[in-house]
Image (cartoon, rainbow, N blue to C red; front, side, top):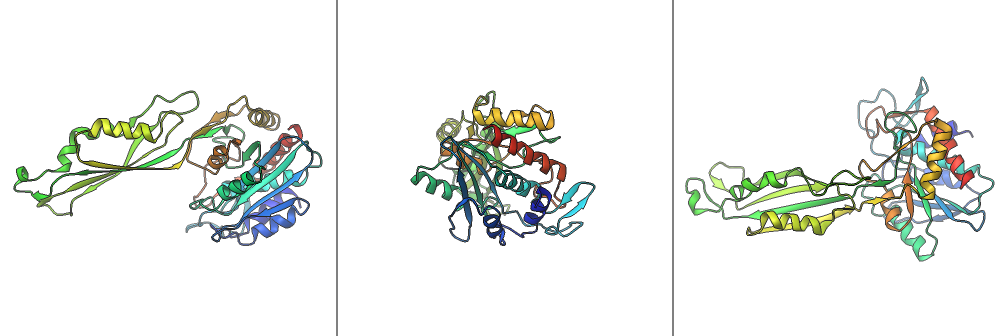
Length: 364
């Protein structure tokens, strides 16, 4: 089975989160000469597959087999891959069965490696990710078997294949801010305390404001208001409270405490309540780290491109790996049709991605 056949096989599994549709059983058989650990929880399936070749360091390839629902409006069946002019159309072609196929093939065809080579695959990345990669890492920690390095094969390239890798990701902090007043009749505003009036002179001081200046790896952390609501949707009653919801995609310079202090500075003296929750923590892997140097050289050799080091975008399971102290980077095909109808990638990219992973393994 060549890489094209393997890729097509994976694309045919209707593996919508958290259902793997049999993909995990196929992967187990495909890598039958590797040791297999299964960690399944709440309908989520997780595989950790490894082989110890020597006493050197531990390199892990990580990814997810699950995809988002296909939706309507496709020109072809999203789970029957269609090839047109080297483009292959199916749900998951970019996000991220191309990456999974590439590292499965590269690892299967490795004959010599001075260390431990492993693969971590989950069916719960596109959903809440509560029972996926994080559960495997918890288990590995109890066994003192966490990898030293990890490559997450998410799509990272921007305009041409090989032009970008992720060496980090921003975190994500969600905020709910409630400002309380006193409800009253609109005809007698002097008898009420209208929280809309209270926030009016403050709003422009917090909305879309940078909380730091950023650094060489990250853009500034910005407070982005996503929702404002209050009242009873009538014209003659003033509200007793206004609720403001916001999100901060934070870098390593801003945390929950800094946001709490920022809100306190601007709403001090008002009756308010703030709730913050962090769904992802930021991380960055030093560009001088072994894994960054190896992936850079492999990309340069196969594509003749010097990739930029990016931290842009949303979140991925790389955040969990980094939180456990694993030096983590991400690299995969071009990201321009993920989660959209007629998602596609080029077979050429998948073939080159496989060769790049093979180069990393060979030179590790």
